[in-house]
Image 1 (tube, helix red, strand yellow):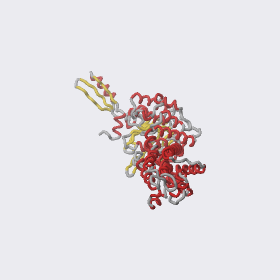
Image 2 (cartoon, rainbow over the protein chains, first blue to last red):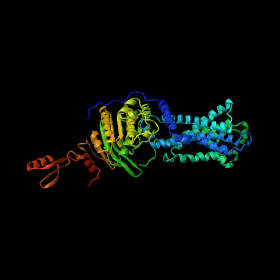
Image 3 (spheres, rainbow over the protein chains, first blue to last red):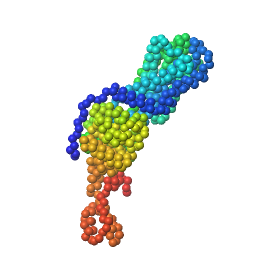
Length: 279
Length: 277
């Protein structure tokens, strides 16, 4: 037996979850903005779709209620932006972290799962703020969308953004486990994103959708996100174009709040540190 | 107290038994090598010890704690050098090491670790730009930044050139000299021989031999091979008493190219895992 002195266990305090979480957030942001393809192709995609759809339907006519079709797209498309930066990029990002060994490596250190998620939340918050700003810039500059002057509208925007981001992020974390590998995660997660946007009145005005489709989509958050953003950026006269003929903000709050709870539950039930593997 | 204490460890996946009753004891401060072919149960065993996997049966204590029920304090005391990780490609070496520095209560200095792992010159390089061997050194840096009492090294020198490999061996020896317990899994038998105080060979989910590199598998008692050339041509003799053979040869007259070969660790290993007839 060797006679080396064995070092005793350290009694120093463990680093705080919040401190580690902030460090993770800084690292997540650096990694995100350094991967040029992600920034150019993924991040700008909703703005690109808005430019295309908005231009195609920019006929100069106004809809009942006074706004143009392009302005309706510009407002609704913010829901797509949040799906993109919260749901899809979190789901794909975590699937990739599971595949490339990020999560396995972290699991072997004293860092907490909460720190890891704080890092993701910081990434989502910054990316979403940038995404919404980009979409609003396109809406205002190209399609003459008018930013609200009423502080109450901005307050509405704030709580809808907050609830939507939390709900989409949590469901995205849970959905990261659906894909068997990081490589096909984007493909798997894009299906519900595209489907919900067609059925929820983001890519197509909700007044022109079949009734059954509207009823099913009402169970999912995207429909209510779009409706909420339209209430902020379109004149109140446009509420006639909605399913109920009004903005239904209490229902928006209720459905998005419920999805936050569902998302949290799904996360707790399904989150895994490593890939499922047989041998 | 032993750093690692394993009794009757079992694990199967579906119907396939990966670990079929492994017993291990690694003392504090020891460098212990676990050898075995792919699929022998090496990785499963170490992953259970590291807290990554559940076990089906058996007793496991790592630093006195069951890894299946380990907390942050325990994770702060161990270091893991993973076999396959490809993360943080867009961060620089220093950014990554500094981040992990923040996860531990009593870490080594960032610059100290970069220097120990020979990464000072590459500190500002993106991880995606590193060669395989350099990438591996980052893995090692992240494994030792927390000043672990127990370090798991899984195939640590894969992709190293010979010079860097020697440097890495020196690093392992200096960690061991500080009292770090090290569990090394490796394919390189010279590496096990150079570093390990003791080693075990695992095959088909069981420990088939255990000992020091000099004694494992009866290496110290195994027959040696004496070879020489004389007037009658080259000769070779396997004997348990090579000294006697040499004495007899020297009495008999002129012999050339006299050689006495003890079985190498590789010979013993290949016999143990049944890779030789």
